[in-house]
Length: 460
Image (cartoon, rainbow, N blue to C red; front, side, top):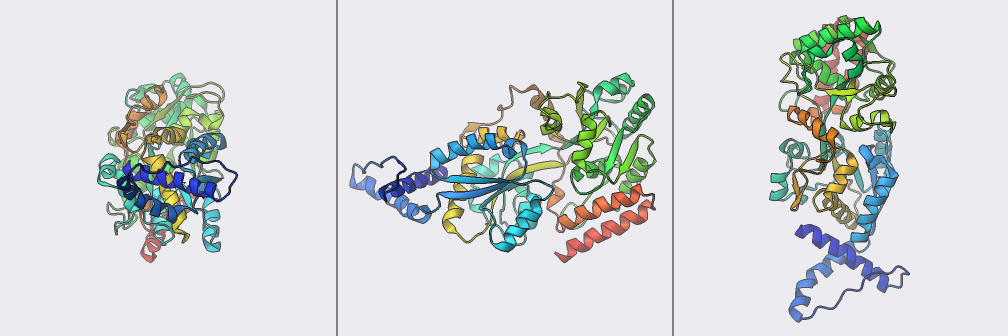
């Protein structure tokens, strides 16, 4: 908090300097120190103010992470930040469809933003690994390292000890079922409603019952592109205990026989179809409108506001009840859910003053008494229980959906998205699923595309 207060003081002093220079903006006037000793204590802060005086305006690009993709929400958050620091933040909103291309183009042109909000797979394993981001390891003191979830913390650092992301929130990605339809089909007997888990055997039986009841496709292995691919990866890996990478994140392992078995099982199911015409977002829309009765692309943000339709939490378009579920596993309790981690990183644009202002922003949002507001805006769970003495463990106590969803958080698995060659691996994955869906020999196809992913990993 001392670091944050010092940075906030810097911002306030910067405004004072602007006001003294004839600006029409009003700024509070700093009182003169009462003693020579006080003046001596304030001198270092004045020197720091000189370093960041010009950095009263920075830019933030954010992917659609909860309401961090909503202008009205950010107007409130950033208005408070500016009022407390004197630093103005200009925002641009990215989409997952073309956000990466936009960032890469800006990097090439030297017009990258100062701040970006997303996950370690982009900030650490991609742009950080390419030398485009500022090492912000100095923002993590011993208290931060003790308070932040260990898996989230580790994902923000590379192998050399450099940090390219400061985490704010996390969640467990999951799947969902149309509970109303499952009840009508007599399929709820295969589900542990208290833990939201099921075995692979029970999953197959439940899907058969729903298919028999509706006479229509129940779920889709979507694969037109990478959108929502965390769902298809978790589905395949969990069915028989397969893995996606080695434990040390040096190679891809989805060519093992357990994953081949899972893909064969999915291909053989009458209730599931491989669909090369849709991505995760499309699947969610089809689930929401009742075309599909399971969704493999799901998380708490969807549960709170299905399909972003603002028509009621836990409900489909026609009012059916949505139940979130862990992916099925052989014993039902060892499911390893893909985690989502989101936070902030700083692009190295060569402007020391703006870098310091960006650091002020990060600590303000992620490690201060204001962190609860930043977390709630994301509609996810805080990566820490305490931030500078402020309790974050109960911020969702008044939200029954969030409280219930927390049953899945202990199932968070390895955050393997930081494996080298990640961007290419994702491309190989959905292309592989298309080939499986087209009826090609599964073992051969999996070996080929996993081999391509490992070649990309070795090249980086």
